[in-house]
Length: 258
Length: 321
Image (tube, rainbow over all chains, first blue to last red; front, side):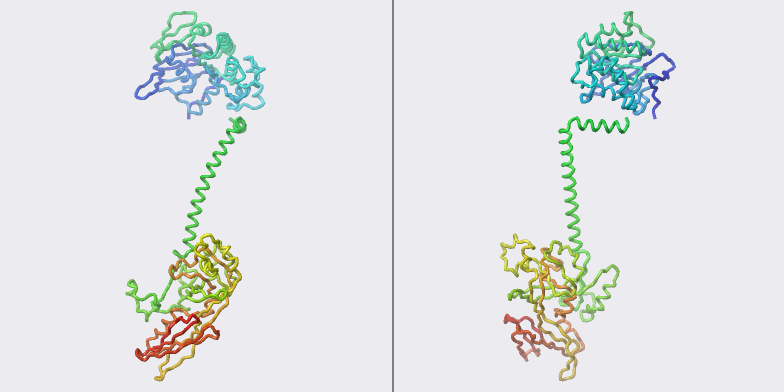
């Protein structure tokens, strides 16, 4: 049996109570034929609870791989990922599923809504997995969609909505179980700048009003500088530098960890 | 996720694309049905073959013959046993003894003889065999047109398909497409007249020197009217190969008829301590047998009786030592 997963209301189990995410010498290698691809190569970092962090880097630098490891969608080759006190490498499959259900929420560049379901049903799906009573589900979904401004579109299917509306629906779905950490993989990648700004405003609002930790992968440095409190730069799977959005000086911590 | 939610989502997904799901279901159904049909066919055929083999008697029928029988002469594998004269005869006590052996279901006499059967005044020569009533369960009678014997003593007869074709004068070409039911239609309920040689006990007689023949009996030509009750496609007597019969009688009826068997001739010459035996042939009361001619042959010391049937051909030759 794996360790029990700390839910949204539980306190972090690490000794450092204010840390939401911590990685230690995290590695993820992929084998392609005879060659080994070092997607994530010895990254150690710490993200405080309620922090808004942007992961930046070129394509293939390991941003999405790192995000997948934090989300529990992938397993590290070596090292550890500790989120809200849960060492993901030690969790059983069941506990890992519970972790993904309750501790983290995730939005993707391509929205990943289920096309055959209405927005309401898409948002309701995590509640079904969480075995929330049917009577409560509709009200919770209504509130979530109301929060992202989609009350009038809740009976529509994703194909009937614009990209921005779909991403807002994806946001509502990611947040319906009230996770402590929001992971966003290029949430504005498929959106125009105006819609992207709109989405980012929502994410910042959740970060500030709910004290939710946000880790966002993006290509756009300007967007990161505008919304993130800290930017972490990756190159070739390695952590290059970290800087706050306002202070441009590199902030290297002990042993290369930032 | 709760079971209700799982079911609801499953139904919802099925309804989402009705045509695709229906075609998929149909495809799977056809596939599974084909598989089941193939398996069932294979297993069924195997069971049929097993049952046929089992009921054919190949594996559970033992044919017992005495060394006194003609058919056992000069068999190398039987050279080590007692001589034919010392071998026990297969009489009723022997049959009962065999029947009481462990795992023996029944023992019955093998009555078969070649004889003439008349149908619509036309004679047909063939092998006739007697069947016990237990043969009703024989697979050979599955799909038979008509019925099995109504009783063990009923004067009834079942014909094998080839003999039915012979009775109706069907040609070889016509045989190929003739069904048993079609063949049976004109035959069922019809009459066959069977002519046979009945063996009856005769009073002991002595010759001039006073020697007594112990195996004296008479042979009487008789006729029996038989009702055709069935025509079977398969061969219930396939075990006999060359000697298989094409006409079948109830066993008890055949026993009551006392039809003379080839072994009866052997018995007449098997009494070692008797100097002479004789066999008589009596003319049947029926007018079919036209003559019985007596001929003395002084050269070899034997006397022959020539029995002539209606075809003017010798039907049987008996000799007296």
